[in-house]
Figure: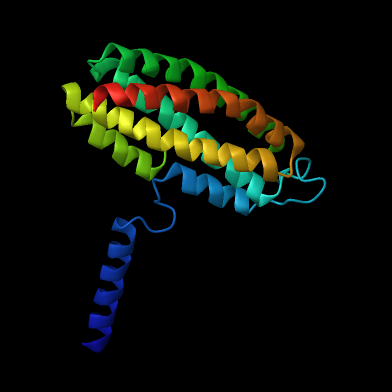
Length: 197
């Protein structure tokens, strides 16, 4: 009887682990990319041996930047369909165009360095998307603007840090070159924010 109870408990524990997103079933693409990069070889001939050509901190920057960029595009595509304020729609259109271009540059750079990037936005960004999807009209506009202000402040901090601290010259250059546009986006959305309060 003890053996049957033990087996039943193990089976229940396994099911609980699996349903809570245990290893292998994690749907957070950004976390999965970080994990994949962490396990890659970072030796001097890393790309030739199937490893990563940058230190792990640089790879983490690339993953965070890719996740943020994809989130900007996806949230802004949503805003193009749901926003009612013309300035909000105009900003969303700019986000889709600008961040799509930056995302493509980062993907090419990551491919050359053998950095695994997320294929979809992370779990937090998926939750934000679902929250915004449930809103409409002026409520949507305000919520989208609030998210854009918060996300662009985080992105500016990320890219400022990257432009100073990244070890890989190409990633450092990417961060430095992308920073003025991010600061411009932040300034633009903060101006819009005053009109949708």
